[in-house]
Amino acid sequence: MTERVGDVVLIEPEPDRLCQYCGEFKECRPYGPNGTDICFKCAMATPERKAEAVAAFRRVLGDGPVEIVDLRRKPSRTEGAP
Ligand SMILES: [Zn+2]
Image (tube, rainbow, N blue to C red; front, side):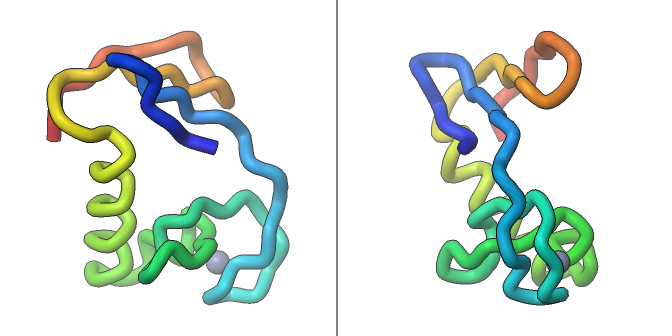
């Protein structure tokens, strides 16, 4: 799950789920239209889907600068507000 805790956004690994677009079981996020599960490849497949995914992620980020901690990869990096 990806969630904001104070000024930190934690990106945690997700268990594989069914992508609502390609039908494969892989790491998905609820960033499709109306919160549907979508894999990264499908989310980036068209400009419309990419815009939807970016908007959904920005809703998680909220307002103001945050530190993004990707628990799937390197320790951390700092990002400005969208
Ligand atoms: Zn997919």
